[in-house]
Length: 344
Image (cartoon, rainbow, N blue to C red; front, side, top):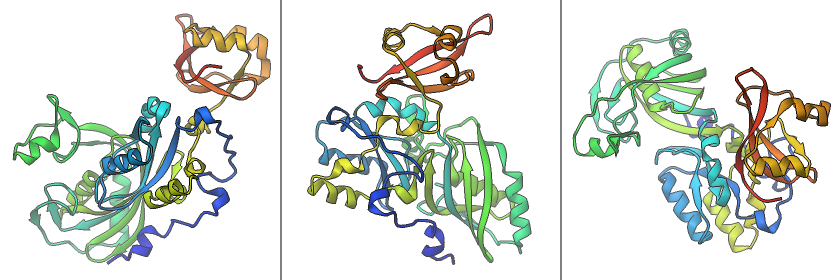
């Protein structure tokens, strides 16, 4: 059996001055108007739904619009990005982030939910396996694969969530979906039936379904017995805060110290710094051609890449809106405003 310390050993204590900050990064100062338009990096514990977390934070911040950046099952732990105020308008960008999980596969037992919370459907003997056998199987599941969403999931069919059908004993046909497994790494094999691994994957990937698929490939079936989400894009587990810590900071009137600014999720993107004339034009919905921008800003302008989203700042470094590089019919670049987040 894999011990809890091995499953979660990557989590480190972060010094108070560094909490919520990636290494080498700079956290811009939030002004009063921005304080409720921001992100929180929450560490969800087992036994809570993602909605439970949102509900608790709503209790601390009444009147603030709050959402989350990707559901975690109740038994799972780890990163749950929380969106406050205008940050809720950026949920699509977070949902598109790659994710990293640490998971445990229990071989030989298949369940109706594909995890340990479900009813046992079938038990099979686990064949003799070596580390080489498991790593060979992992290589076959890397890259683009297809998954059928589990019945116990929030995917909608005919306006109804699949788990609502499942609870009524109704099995609904689900078309397979393409997802990407960027890496599968074996952490520990505990013979005969437990496999601890780490996976980096695209949005829409079900780790419990991946466990079921690998178990079937190995000839004995299996289910997910442990799941920890290590990261959602720039949101990292070792920098996340528990609900208890959030409540403590709220009691001490220090909760704003845990807030992350609106442009936090774009820290790895190229940035645009424009004068008032360009900012005003974009805020009014006008397109800006690359040639004109290049003539004015020269080397200060990042090289355009088609469909790339960039945060746009004033010359005083105030984050104002998002814009996207596009190509016209003549294959020439132009900048299209995407989301205006605040006036300048």
